[in-house]
Length: 156
Image 1 (spheres, one colour):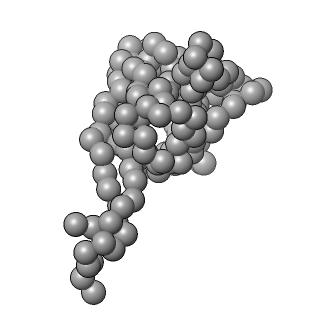
Image 2 (image 1 turned 60 degrees about the vertical axis):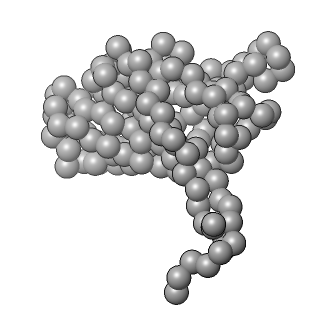
């Protein structure tokens, strides 16, 4: 079956590399969302986004169920204040989980993807993103997070 005019289709925005990662992320720790990643403005007001996390680790063994969680902070939600930064006992706005590969070997790149609903509170919502490392290994500095806005609309 061919997609007809006005059928509902997904629409993909422009991917943005948010990387500014000069520090590693230890196991059982959060990244520094304001220093490791550039902020991102959802200028398309997209309801969803696709995220790709590219990373590697210097040594050690990845655990049996490795994962890396993605969290966000909404910037200036009341004109001045941000939502709370995630910490171990109050993680706040969870977006999703990157499932890591247990077969990855040290110093080899791994790329993981996820789709998430964006908790927009205003037009052109600004975000800071944080990752939580739960892999039993340190994520090396120079890891990268890319975000691409997603929506649906009629086909042309």
